[in-house]
Image (cartoon, rainbow, N blue to C red; front, side, top):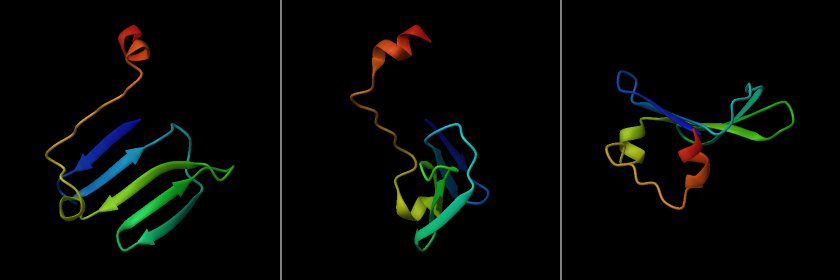
Amino acid sequence: MRLNYDAATDSLYIHLAERASVDSDEVVDGVVLDYDATGALVGIDVQHASTKADIHHLALSHLPLTQLEAA
């Protein structure tokens, strides 16, 4: 998973998988879910992110650290 924030557009993209998006659905104003060819969720696009989330704080917990340590 990757997080990308663009300060110029105040947009946050959460990459859930490294697969191409072929379909999208705006579930609420400014929040778009992206899906791959099989219908699996691959990303979340959040417009005006600073008004919807605390983008200056990221807390991670319960990650599979054994996989991270091997990288």
